[in-house]
Every structure is written in C-alpha cells, then in structure tokens.
Image 1: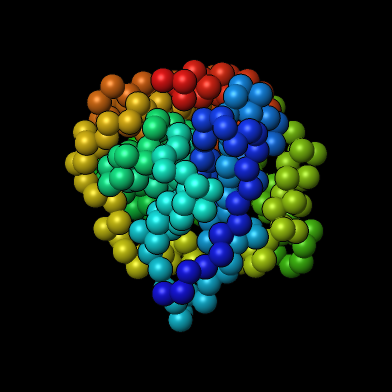
Image 2: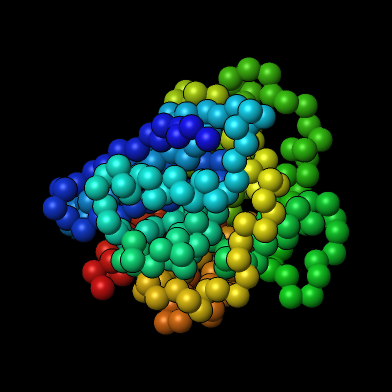
Length: 292
C-alpha cells in the first residue's frame, strides 16, 4: 500500500521533552485545543498533534482500492514520531486514540516514555462492539464493558435513521449537536465556541465523509485488539475520566486496574470533550505525569 501523507504540527522548543497527542477515531488533531497545548508548552514540553488518515488535512484514501485496518492507523502514529525525529515520546491519547497508545506501549515499549489515556477504554475490551450492541438494543454479555449513557444511545440511534444534512449549515449544526451530547451534562456548554470549532473542522477537511473509512477499517479487522496484554505495559500510565463521561463511563477505572502501577484521575464535570474549564487541571496532571 502506498504511504499516505499525514498532516502534523508541533509547538514549543525542540529541546523540550516531547508529547505526542493522539486523538480518537474519525477526529482531527485540532480537537486538542490550542489553549490546552499552550499550557503544556508553557510547562516545558514540545507538543505534536496530527490528523489521522482520512481526517482533516491528511490524505483521504480510496478505501475500495486501498483498504486498511486499525493496525495501519496505529502505524501512522509511529510514522509521525519518525517524521519529527522522535525515538520515543510521552503519548497523551483521547478516546480510541487511547487504544492506539496502549497497543504501542505493548508492542513498542521503547517508544513510550509515559502513557496518558483520556476518556478511553481498556485494550481488548471490544469497545466498538459494546457501543454497537447498545445502539441496536441488544443485551450486553456478562463481563462486557459498561455501555454508553442513555442520552448517547438516543442521539446516535436518531442519527442513523435521519436524512443526511443538506449543506454546510445543516452539517455544522449536526456536528454541534453531537459535541453537545459528548460534552455531557456536568459543565455549561458554550455553543458559540462549539460553532467556531466545528466550522474550523468542516472547513479544513479535505473530505468530511472520508472519516467513515475508520469504521470500515475496524470492520476489516475486528480482532484488532489483543486480549489480556495490559499487564505487559511498563510505561507509567495515567487513566483520566470525567465524572459525566457519556460514551465510555467507568472504562478508565478498568484501565487503571489492569495496567500495573497505573493511576486513575477523575475530573469533576467533564464528559467526552476537552472544554476550557478542565484545561488547567488536565495540563497540570499531564505535566506532573510526564516529569516522571
């Protein structure tokens, strides 16, 4: 398969300890807020963020001609590190980006200085199947990860059966509605800030519909996640979850239980997004964790 081009950018001094930010499935790197990154660079960190393939300014792929799996998306992480001259880095990951970070920490431990996972699920827990069963109204087998919150299920069920948005305004309104659900109910929702963010995401995407290829990649290799390997992770690990997490409630505690020496951090009021109210608390914790 020909290598695709991955967009990335870095902040801070090249001599500072590097943090690589890994965003979740179908998400652009600019979902890592500039103000949050500014707190990390002010704390003496070199910070890199990037767009996954088929998102943002990275190349879009003709999936029918060049199908890929989440192993390829994982390998893109290593390609970004190589392009920035990093033998290793502190990995800070959000949502499904946390699966990538955990897998790299298992497979390539020499490349992971520390691991931070925010709003993520334990590797091997088949989070995608749990969410799909919830959306389909199917029972969860014993031992499954906790399902998403009812408001999450209600929104995405309605989304599946709704007609596609007509034009830019309707698409952005839908993206804001999704952000509102993911934001949770614990903190005020700033709709003006959400509109600015979603307009930026819409306008910088080469092809907004290409993100659906991430779902096709998951279906192409449903056994992407190895089971029973989290005890192999040696990198100091911080698992972070908001008290109002709607997508993966209780998953971070399981990560902290299964990775030796991992710590759990609960952020009051936070959902599945990174609003300004939590930047200081998150950045302070990550700066301390990456100082180890």
